[in-house]
Length: 399
Ligand code: KET
Image (tube, rainbow, N blue to C red):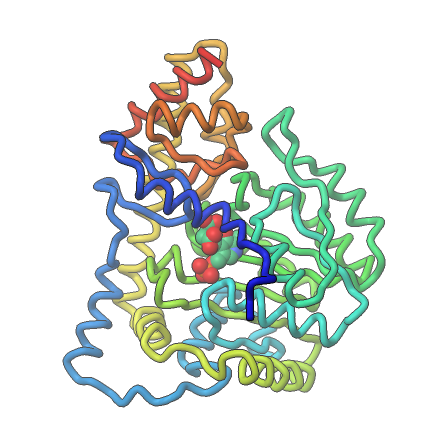
């Protein structure tokens, strides 16, 4: 029945992560996937999450269906975390928020909403991109295009090229933006640059879709949401996908949110209705356990404070690793400018390494970096960073 189907080429991130686990190199290092590991190389269970889970286990509640839009206490917590406690748009009831299956689920539901509302609109995605953006929007029937983002010469932002592309887009085009910790480059916009981008989005009548999968991993929970809040304050209508996979370390619980900022409360009601209809026809409702865990942490003052401390520790550890790599590489490779390791931020760094370099890193040293040259920084720790910089120095010296 299915022999005519094409072979799945595999996912470039999950596929290499699997290959890493099959490798037997004694000092192998996994820098493939966007997972946060602590300095012992373990995926942490945050104490705030464990505390809520103990409470849930000690007094088991019926696992009923959640509403199509998700748990009310989860949705309001998403709004506070993403838009800030003092958000005018939220206070005016102009934001329709649902609990989603991670950030990916939020992107999919948002893509379906946009395709139904604006069937003619295409989406513009940063070059380079998180590949799944193409798959999710293309799969939802939205034509996909790219806008310039990264400048290999400076390992920084191609801001002028990006702006001139945005200025030329047809009105009602969708623009996918990363408010912080750009994946895969680690290159973010400054506040002044955001102001200019928001100006163009507004003048050109574009539809911004912000994908915030790493809130808190760049500069802080509020600072990282700057673009979202500035856009809301500027009075734009837009969508935000957010994820708790990384910042709460609850990847497999599939916890995210989709918020649609509208012009009025009545419009937000209409949107919420359509979001429920989309959820109902795809998977009916969001997960009970993850919803209660996240809402439990976010709505408890002490647990919330503990969570923020944990996120700060993750952020500081990643920035420490960046500093160590920069120092060690600069010493081992005097002619090589490793400054991008400290200029770029968040979970990823874009090395610009060639395919040859990447293959040699895997084969000679067991160092796994995905084919785009993106390094997932949390795979580094005090015990393996030296092996990493030795491996980098070896391949850059010999190839
Ligand atoms: N958006 C971006 C930009 C992103 O990097 C990820 C995950 C997601 C959304 C998905 O979030 P989730 O809540 O897990 O559905 N990225 C990492 C894992 C993956 O590829 O799925 C990664 O890039 O390694």
